[in-house]
Amino acid sequence: MPRLFHAAMALVLLTATTEAANVVLTAPSATQARTKVISWVAAQGVTDKATLQRVGKAWALGKQPVSASRLHDMVVGTFASIDAKTKAFVESCSMKPDATQPDTAILKGKDAFYSANMRLFYGRYLAQMRMYDEALELLASLDPKSVVDPAACLYFKAVCEHQLLMKTEGLATINTLLGSTAGVPLRYQTTAELMRHDLQALKKDSLAAISRKMKDVERRLDLGRGGQRVQKEEDEIVASLDAIIEKLEQQGGT
View 1 (cartoon, helix red, strand yellow):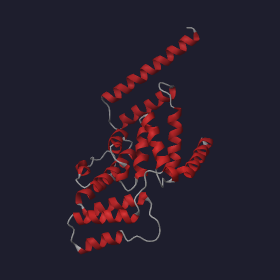
View 2 (cartoon, one colour):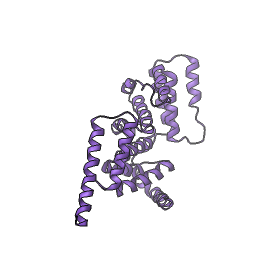
View 3 (cartoon, helix red, strand yellow):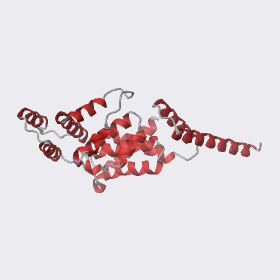
């Protein structure tokens, strides 16, 4: 494992040297994000002086650069400080996974800036809760250019695809993250390289793939997600194991 980690770090450094020539996705500056947030606040009809001062103070940017991840937290924090339904939604995502799931109706808001960044917030939460199918449904339909943290959007999408053994899709997302996205945090870069190595080595119906499917079935059952999807995966596992056993028997001449 240490050798694999060092190899991943070497690839990260190599990627960084060529990133500038291939960058397609760039996070907005803190000033640009602030402008969009202030516009959103104004569109909500906020006139209370104390509230406006609080928002202004929260977005009093200093000389130090602000990471895209921090910007996204600030954006969502402002949404929650202005809108009661958003506040309740954000607070519900900090509760235990078995608690009542939040009302996702707010994700379909008319304001594109608001809905995109709230969908990223919720998609990240779902991925962290190992609800990869639900997270991927959100993140796959989200344009990374529409959020203040495009790297996070791609990273958590790749995590979902990796966990769901979506080799082609996962490798494509990782390539975009590492090759065409500016300002990717080192922790994302390193993990993405490890996921890429894992997916590249993944072979259909191999023991490694079967083991991963078994873990996915276990994850779904832990989340109370039984049903046809689990039954289908269990059938595929049995069929793959039968095929391996048959092949071994043929090789052994039995």
